[in-house]
Image 1: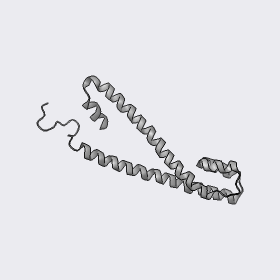
Image 2: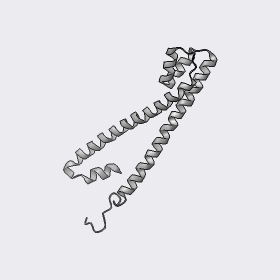
Image 3: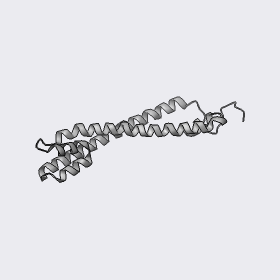
Image 4: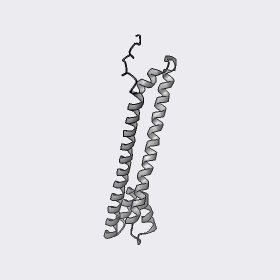
Length: 136
């Protein structure tokens, strides 16, 4: 729908430029969204995993656990059972909470964009339909 609206509103001589700008801005928005939401998820993970890392863990295992879920799993393999279980449980909780934060923010953004789209474009006729009084 948005591509039809954008390319259709451009003069025919500029339709290619409008389509390329639409594609480029879409790719930029995807990359920016992944970067921002990924950073938020990582922030939540890192702030929550700290409480689950025992004090007697080596600096290497501490750093790997703090870095990512994969790092926590990798470092837990080399640790004794009670410490490994604590780290794995904490990593699972922290990762899940990070994902929940990302999903919640994404949902709020999608609802806000839907409301904005409906309110800003409600005066436009459906694509392919002419406005009342408009000649074909």
